[in-house]
Image 1 (cartoon, rainbow, N blue to C red):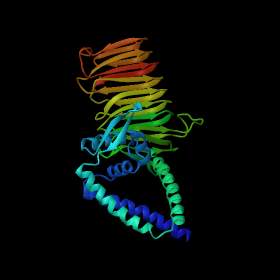
Image 2: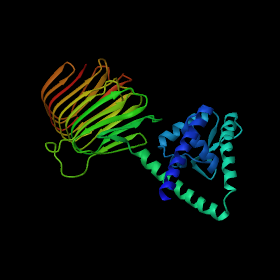
Image 3: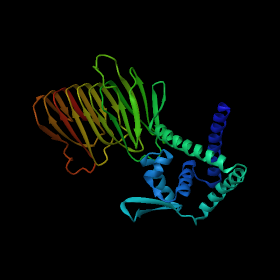
Image 4: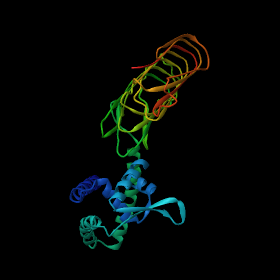
Length: 354
């Protein structure tokens, strides 16, 4: 009996998904749009945060969806009269599209109400208690699944959804890091790892790749990460904890900022065309540093440390001392430019156009 009950419960979830797809097809909307509308019909006006909790969507994803639904006139957002800091979301029921959707849902609701008449009040009380408990469990598990990336034998990814900007954060050390780009319109990022597997979390457009905090050195337990970032949205990149080798082909990325802290053996950056003033902050001892930017891209370099060999565009320096400032001739007037700051000692530094 128990197994049959669980099997029928799972089948009920599957049919619910199929029903939403059928309604979405008839109404010209997405399944997630319908989920939000159904929640608002059930709970009444509520906040975007509560909608995110109910659907398991990130804050950024629910905001993008509400923007779109508000543009179509299906809902509106307004300030809470009791708390000006909160925004309340409410449906606009008199829209023709809303009536079409309501009719489709109400038809199934009528069938359920007729079915309920075959049960006693005591039986319905028991069923109601079970459904409430089941829904609570499902909501928590959906939220947990949405925060975790998909994984398949060391390969991770997450959907782009409605994320408008993103951040890659690696707060722990790594042996080798390879960064690439892709214009895939569906995927926020992809990553493959060799060696010990890190903990990967994705929330509100922030990808955090964290290795365990146990004794580790660059020469033991090789940690290798190959990460591909979406080129459609701007990115902030923060790397901490030391890296033996970084090879970053970011030529097609929308780079908002880049910060690398900790010792490095070698780093090779292929930067994209800057948008606005893009800060690049590099700190920690490094043997070899090569930074290439698009031809004609303005740049300013503030070097706080010592370098045995330094090439900046067509200038060559040896035994470069502390607190040196260099910049391309058009830096001050350029609308789009790089602001690079390098701290601590470096063996060989090359900052040139491609």
